[in-house]
Amino acid sequence: MYRVDLNCDMGESFGAYKMGTDEEILDYVTSANIACGFHAGDPATMRKMVTLALEKGIAIGAHPGLPDLVGFGRRNMDISPQEAFDMIVYQIGALYGFVKAEGGKMQHVKPHGALYNMAAKSRELSDAIAQAVYKVDSDLILFGLSGSELVKAGQAIGLRTASEVFADRTYQQDGSLTPRRQPDAMITDDKLAIDQVIRMVKEGKVLSQQGVEVKIQAETVCIHGDGPHALNFARQIRELLINSDVNVQAAGR
Image (cartoon, rainbow, N blue to C red; front, side, top):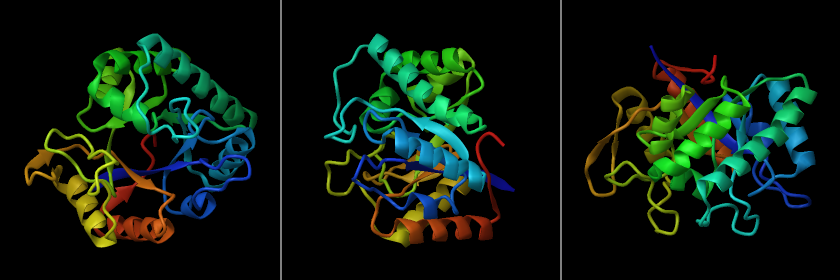
């Protein structure tokens, strides 16, 4: 039987500003990536998300991003590897504290947005991120784009890694995600997105925007919780994976 983790970026509300339907989507995913305050999130939101995830038995991961609240961490920044290391350690530590305070255990780390995409192509940046994760807790799993430098860096330092694919994003022929600024970056048709996921999981392939088949490893699938139909999509994809003989289970279990 095939096996895959379903993860979702969560805890991205900030103060009075609410984003996503986190509590409801937790019923359909197996791993939660919780924002750590740099690109989104705040202490109260972090605590609430940790509590909810533990109550529902969902694996918890830190979702560290660039210090860019206004840009939601999706704008590239010229940072050094040392700055990346410091940012990752700082943000993991923040969420780690809440998880420990609530009696839980952190499963993984998944960089957010621009930091994630920058690391996917930069081995120097990826090495710094992997080192930060390893030094905080070598038992943590590092999530990274399938085939990326981040996955390679994690494996090289001795971390467990989870190769990630995206349900609602299109791909380029080099295996990278289509930049969000392009009009065809997102898949808005639920059926197309679900078909893409099933194929990535069961066949290890995805059709790029250039019409080229790209080999891909799908160990964890990201679904976004902030879209207009996010909850319904999460429900559909969970049900269809199970009906397609795919065991949906957290990466570390």
